[in-house]
Length: 211
Image 1 (tube, rainbow, N blue to C red):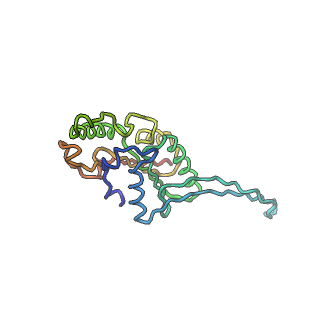
Image 2: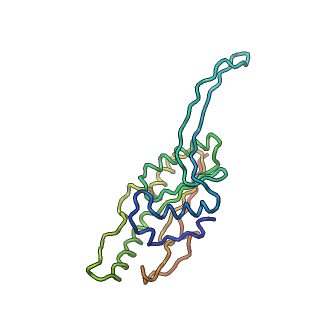
Image 3: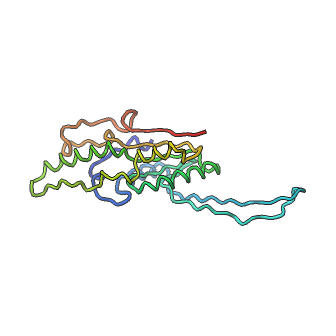
């Protein structure tokens, strides 16, 4: 399992990086090494009209539903890493999962994201602790990432949409990094112990499936 080896390293996490940043790249690489590929999924529908004698009378123009590049695809499962994008991405993802599942293209989908509130508190502790190791004239209390915004993709936003059933009947597994996913480093936070990673009780994982 790719996530068994993943640790949230402050060197890649607490750095400016736009919509995705370094963390999704690391996770995607773990999946890529195991045969998962970035894939665009388009769906083509075409209607055929038949008369009472069951003979074809007309073929309608095809209807093309353009998809988007999913981060990881293998077999019949999609895995998207929605780490720090606009939360509207979740609407796009879940609506697409529904369409693809109903069309018989995928069997399930996985969303990997972050538990914003729990990681926010950890980021602030780590950054403060790190600043204390620097000379006073080099200290900067402002984090290099925005941990206060609630308009980016995170566990809370995903759960809200899943409870509304945006994904239809498609089974969706949501995996969220928490403070226990942190790769503990004595130089970054001296008083916090090293946790076990990505195990029950440390990573928030929820399965949503509507019949």
